Image (cartoon, rainbow, N blue to C red):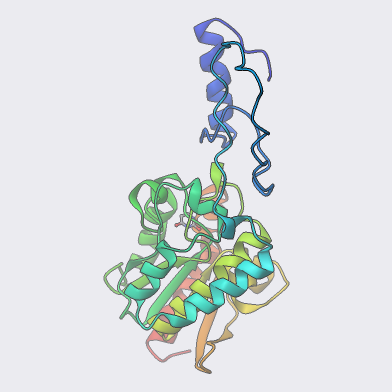
Length: 272
Ligand code: URA
């Protein structure tokens, strides 16, 4: 392991550097290959080993499901998601699903917020630190901006339903991997099907690409209406737009986000 500085200020500076870089979650003392099967116990030692300093804790093994091939786990996810007959059932199934390794580093499942009866469903990427702590999507700064944007078209969370394509926080807020998204996708697909919104707002590229099957980046697709098809054959009008976290970093682009929200308002009023 890397030599650590011994004085307090240098240690604090090192810690701050990591937190700023997004490494704000301590999983273990040493790196582990979490896809590897646990090693078999060594054969019984003949003589008792001399007393040494306490051995480092063994790596925490992931449940078998999370260590299986992603396609196999995605198949299990599809099977389980299909069984949910209500959003409450789906949340309970997801809470008991061990196939996505993110579950084991996250504090909470951030399943949904808002009103599932609303005409609009918004889907983002994945929870961040605030959402992980609270257990609901869009609770932090992005969520506050989202609320302000909704307010400009006369909506609030009591009128819309909010979720993410991945319901557990990726460590350090990294982008979820394609495998993690593929594993979680059957759940968000079923969530959309059960909520059955009239309009779907895809917040950011990953939500738009994964839900609508489009390859182009969000700056090319935002503001254009697409059709989202549920597995049971219903069609939902879907609008990709810029993610509020991106708008916080690029405030000049807020005008594009504002245009998209105006388009949603017109659609809600039957003017689009
Ligand atoms: N970003 C997302 O995509 N979702 C959240 O819930 C929070 C931030």
